[in-house]
Length: 154
Image 1 (cartoon, rainbow, N blue to C red):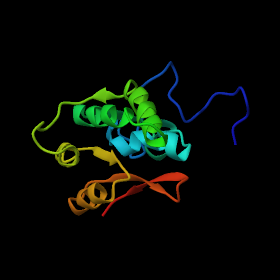
Image 2 (image 1 turned 60 degrees about the vertical axis):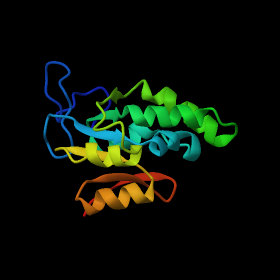
Image 3 (image 1 turned 180 degrees about the vertical axis):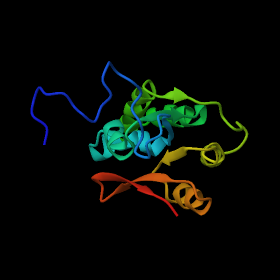
């Protein structure tokens, strides 16, 4: 147990460095956020970025241009889904917009294609996308019991 005000012996001395991820690598894991993942904070009242941070340590949130377009379309709707999409668009500002693997294919397929790279995870609640990613051996961050996020792997 650490006393308040004392040094944290588990952190390097001398200033801030890039935090390591849970596996001990100093590089950030890239986490692609799907449209429905960006809508989770409004729908389920969770802090998406801090919950992913608890799971991974250091990570880089990434979105695809197709996901931003999907949220923009959904944000025009009235009601809860429109409000959730508008909040999702606001959260896009905290993410890196990655290059799309192909604009002519559906957004879900773009997500699956992008996630095939090294050290990448996808945050989604879409069952079809989640099952396709898990079948390819790609890790997925998904909602559990509408309260917490968990990492799924096969």
